[in-house]
Length: 69
Image (cartoon, rainbow, N blue to C red; front, side, top):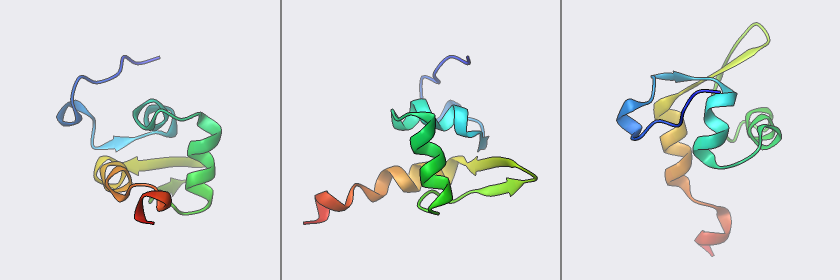
């Protein structure tokens, strides 16, 4: 397991679901559910998912739907 980066600037440009889960503080199942439902923008290369750092940050900036109420 890779250590958690100390800042967002230290993140690589392209992340795997395994790297995204600790950033969002969610399980791998939740990350895959977000990918399957297209809530988290991604690219598939064969059977592998890749997520751009900017897309993770954009997802985090969205907030939850409950906050909008």
